[in-house]
Length: 509
Image (cartoon, rainbow, N blue to C red; front, side):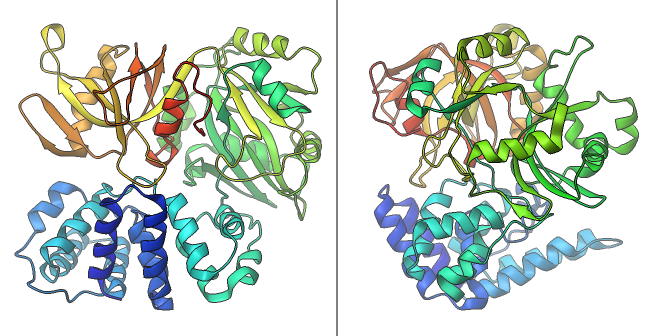
């Protein structure tokens, strides 16, 4: 398969907002892809090389750029092999060798292919919004039910390998995916609810649990081998030794637990989220002096040889209580007074509650509304599109953020507002240093950035607006914090923003 075929498909995807058309483009391309190039093609089109981020930035690539080739000559297999070699090159002279490999690759690419590779390698394509469309395209191309693809994707954690299985072996190959200890699953997520009364009325028989202001973790154990993963499936075991030691001491031989972790102060209240996240990058030496993390588990996906994904939540939570004991998140089944649990959670310094249907299986993402989160204030996870230079006291700092919501149909983020409110002096200094590292271009007032940073925004609501392309604008938006535990695929959609319009009950979020 020629790389130019992938580039053409990428351009076609960008040129339409129709989800049906995007799915058709992708399905046609996948149907004609050789088996040994399919996984790489899927990886490229969903915005991340099969090797993941290979540590090459925009400035480095710019220095390596050469005159483009006149006609297409690169195959997907050649590009994938070169990126694989770049990713594994290390040791003395590795920087020079990596540069040589990339310079040679770019010299053989046309202008359009160079542009595609630049955006692929620097993360500008990595918006994640195409994942849902790609799942549907894989199902169409392989003539299998889309739910079978979704489930296999949840279990594999990787869309390229899921696509390869679907095209090579159909439903049987997809159904062969099982929980594998040491291979993280894509997590199940909660959808927002307007109120506690709405959530409990919608779901019926429920569990009501504290919603913690922590970092999502997934823990795998077999014997004494323990692995800890983030919500983006990154292995952080080396940075959170106390969590691994704790799980190693639980009364089981094998287990997969879903939960959150956070740092607590001496009074047992949660410390700022940034303090918890700082542990995910700490060295062993730093851990000795760092704040200890405390886990709170809320689901058990596997226990001592038995997979539990498909059993009702009430059974998974029974298994959880037997193995996790005091480390189960606070909450109750079928509580007589859900409001008392919400009040207790808020009083303890947490965000609110999560209401869960007790008969629901575990399903990655926000499939349906089996889990509903209730918080007393509106918050949205949005991507940063740009940032303006400040004035007055903020002169010299990058201040006013341009905010975008995710397009669920795979298009670029949709701008929904700006804000500089809530930014501390510390955050202003951080933005001024960090955001230029994500820069794509700038003008006299604004630095425009790749949409890969997620920021949590508190707001009073939204209103209709002709100023922004999505037809809505944020009201009284203020920055709560950046979310390094999330990537752009975790950002809220434009549908979620629109549902905050007064009286709007139609958008799916």
